[in-house]
Amino acid sequence: MSTTTNSKPPYELVDFAKIPGVPCPCGTARRGLADVDDFPGTIHVTQIALDNALHYHKRLTETYYFLECEPGAQMQLGDELLDVQPGTCIMIRPGTRHRAIGRMKVLIVVYPKFDPADEWFD
Image (cartoon, rainbow, N blue to C red):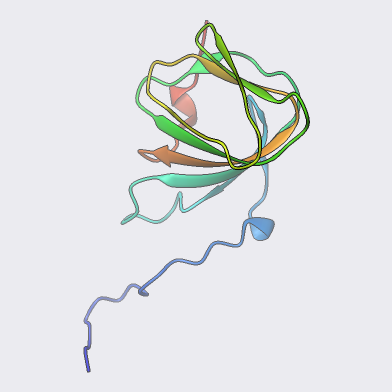
């Protein structure tokens, strides 16, 4: 039998239904694991409202996994428009201007931890 002297539990449980939504440039985000010091990123469930402002991050890498999308949903990445649907995944590197177009629900993995000061608009 293995014992540990670590006072932290062996896992973290996130119930996104209990995390308050916060406004973001895309709509409403629920951000999980932000307060967990030994996890290097954050996980967001974001309800994207409509057409959103083109923006970028200087340090953050975001990975979007599309859970739900209305027909015609797209992502703008630089000058390119990509059609997205449930099951699509896009990794967005720092410095890439991007925005979501249409209504959708997205799981976003952010590395390093999300920092609202690293949202830049032209």
